[in-house]
Image (tube, rainbow, N blue to C red; front, side, top):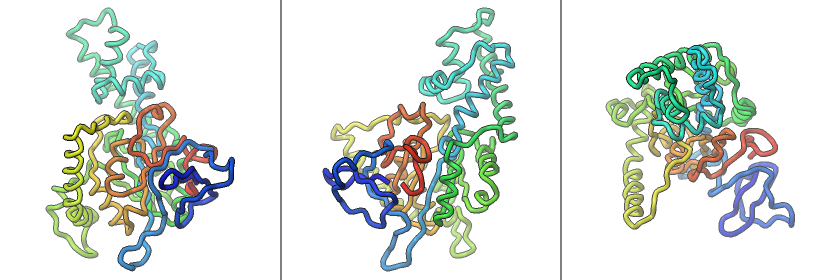
Length: 349
């Protein structure tokens, strides 16, 4: 575990996460971290007390599309390439580098990726301009069918070390929540396939939420209370309490912007049609799982998710796939090269 001390102190490294982080100066030669990580705040797991109440749970929120599975590389990109083969354009194969460049320059739709590609390399000679939209739509329809088949067959790998991290978190008694639908359509059931690959124990002990399923307005229409309240109703209650704080933060951000402090673009946003999740959403997820934000953590590849989680007080970790690591992760408290020893995120870190 590597932690940046408050102030100008150096990085310190210990074998496990301490119960309380105290600025210290390690012996000479011991302060260089073996893994790439930037920490901007302290994260104390499993310790969260409020008004003398009992300890609350550590809640670990994982982004499914990108953290547990590299859905872009092993799902969408592969499906596009198989669609090109089926159409007789086997020469049009997207390498990971080409695919991620298209995600950056396209219009955030599948059809937009295809159009951006042929705009760059040139359209088939025998294809008239008026036939291009139908050509693009046919490729994308085949891609969607191929992608569904990949998911139904569970024919994709989890990210290296992700399953081990999940098991370690469960063994430590953490509450795990998986956010799905950030880089795939909920109807494609990518998260169901991931849960099947992880196994029955994980499926029974992990809560799965789709980021597009709950909105404050919809949930607020229910007035459930107590033990009979649904999860959505409990979320609505917690979200209502956080609205005033969120409004204050919004006004402060707007005031800073009016003074000329620029707001940076999210260079890591690669998901098509990604839903916006507010800080109050993360506060609600933590509260309904018996935890508090200050003892909870988000592990994600989306800078927008991390920004919202950080606004709620969660510790944020970026674990991007290698080609996405070139993006900017300004909202990450810690950044890791994958999972596992040697440079990745482990539960002890």
